[in-house]
Each structure stands twice: as C-alpha cells, then as structure tokens.
Amino acid sequence: MRLVKVSSRAHYGLRAMTELARAYGRGPVALSEIARAEHLSQGYLEQLIAALRRAGLVEATRGAAGGYQLARSPESISVYEVYRAVEGPIALVECADDGYVAGSCEREPLCASRGIWRRVRQAIEQVLSTTTLADLVREVDGEGACEEPRAGFIRLEALQHGSGKAMCTTR
Amino acid sequence: MRLVKVSSRAHYGLRAMTELARAYGRGPVALSEIARAEHLSQGYLEQLIAALRRAGLVEATRGAAGGYQLARSPESISVYEVYRAVEGPIALVECADDGYVAGSCEREPLCASRGIWRRVRQAIEQVLSTTTLADLVREVDGEGACEEPRAGFIRLEALQHGSGKAMCTTR
DNA sequence: TACAATTCCTAGTAGCTAACTAGGAATTCG
DNA sequence: CGAATTCCTAGTTAGCTACTAGGAATTGTA
Image (cartoon, rainbow over the protein chains, first blue to last red):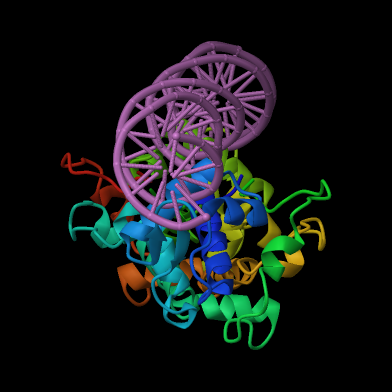
C-alpha cells in the first residue's frame, strides 16, 4: 500500500553519512561505532559503505584503529550523490527515467501519464541535489555543528543504550 | 537497485484515468476497452478502478453497455487524488510520513536524515497535486483535447493492434 | 424471457527482490 | 602474535507486488 518509498539502502546509507559528517576532521570512525549509534546491522552497513567508497565519497583506513571518513567536506557532498552511490539512478517508471531510449515504448506519443513522472523525478532530484550533508547535520545539531569539532563523540555516544522504543526503519 | 519507484498500481491507475479523461462527456467506457487501449490486464484493472470508484473519482454503470466515467471534470481531478485512491498516502519512510506520531522514534531529536525525506515528500505532493488529468491529456493530445468531444474513440482505437514493441510497464 | 455484456467481490499464487546473515580472507596497530 | 578492523562473496528468508481464477449480481437487447 505504499506508492513511493525509500529503500533502507538509501535511508541507512544517508544515516551513516550524517554520522561521518558529524565526525568530519577527527579521523576514521569504525563501522561498529556507526552501527551502534544508528542502530543498524553492521554486516548490512558494510555493503552500503562499500558502495559509498567505490563512489569516492568515503575513504577507508584498514586494520586496527581503522575506519571510514568522508573523502570531502560535508558541505560539498549532496544527498543526491549519496543516494546514487547506494541506489543508482532514480527509477520511477522506466519510460520516464534517465536511460530511457526514446521510442522504445510504442505508446509513447499518446501516453498521457509519462509527463507527470518525469516532473516528479525532477522535483525529487532537485531537492536531493540542493541539500548537503552539512545542511542536514546543521538542521538538527544547530549552527556550527560541522565546523568546530567538539570533544569526544557526544552525539554518537548519547544514544547507545536503546530504551526499547521503535527505531526509524523502512517499514 | 531502484530507490524511489512508482508501483504499477499508480501507473496503471493513472493511465486508466487519462483514458477516461479523454472520453469525458461521452458516457461510460467499458473496462475491456481501456484495457485494450492501454495494454493492461483487465482483471488487475478491475481492482484498481474499484479503488477509484470507492474514492468517488469514477462512477460505474452496471450491466450491458455499462462502464466507467469520471465523476467530475478532468480539470478538477488532480493526479494526487488518483494516486492516493489507488495507493494510499505517500509513504517514503515512516518517520517522515503523514501519520507519524512525534516521538515514536527515539532517535528523532538527533536524526539528521529525517528532514530530507520530509522535503522530498512535500516536493512530490506539490507536483502531483498541482497537475490535473486535463493537464496530462492536453500535454499529449494538444489544446482542446478535453473540451470538444470528437467523433468516436479516435485515441482509444488508434493503438489496438500492438506492433510487438515493448509497452510501458513498471519493470 | 433468455443471453450477452458488463460490473463487482474474494481468494489464491507465483516470482521477485529487499534486507539481511554467514563465513572467511586481508590488513594493520599495539 | 593477536585483536580489531576493512573487504568480499554467496546464501537465505520473508514479504509483497502484480497478477489470475472463479463466480455472483446487474442490465440492455434480441
């Protein structure tokens, strides 16, 4: 019963990236820490962060005391980039998507429903590409959230012991 | 590999509605005719149009020579109404959706990813609710498409014998 | 009055895929 | 050396979307 939905890949991937944005400039953060802070499965997160790494958005440091950090500043990474890295291009309906070859649907010239999906897609892309990780973090943590590193991982540690309340999940 | 996608319910439902918009003012159109024109499964379409009827968007005439017609003019029916009728409210991520009860996610105060999904949802709703069936049909059929009923079901008949090319489907 | 064409309703089903889990190899710090 | 990490690939499972099937009720037409 849900028409347009966001997969957990995108949701989790973005959540991981906001954690890295918060820790920007403080060296690598281990995946276990992110998983704990965001209450996500570490194994699953591994796959998502691998995609983010391949896209050049995060850098990994292997071995003990290793972890991940943003490859660029939070101000320069848009949510759209994160989205594409973990999910690929937005695919609403094939005939209104990016790779669509004009004419491959014979109904095309008379199809009255195509136009709207194109516009919806563009609206989504617009919002995603004009918002950066820094925007998201600032929105919640307040001004200066990304600029001046505070002592320790305040945000990360704050939520460690869940109260049993529901977490944000896809479903 | 698709992050945001439109279900076939919405896509098909909208396509059926654009056909009804084209036939507006000419009496009921049988489902078999719509199914043929849009190359959709009639049985599946039955379920979709039932939802549209319950939502008060179409009216049914039972019995022989029966069929469906728009309950209101194409100018007064937004795509958003169609969407909601067949799919329910837009549900991107539970914590950013309509029925979300503030505070039910304990991460809420620190969650930096919520904001963006709310904005994406609003952008989608904006596009959907400012576009009417008449807009869609006019876009494709040209000016006057919905105003002056032409003779016969030109548009409906035009595509009856498929050339074997791929049709617009969800996948 | 039959019958053909339609709407209406419910239940089932099959295949896909998202969301994980498992297991282990490679790397690096202490 | 060993603990902690990243890295990689191959399952697995449960849910859901997109149907199909079957039949009852309604109504214009011959």
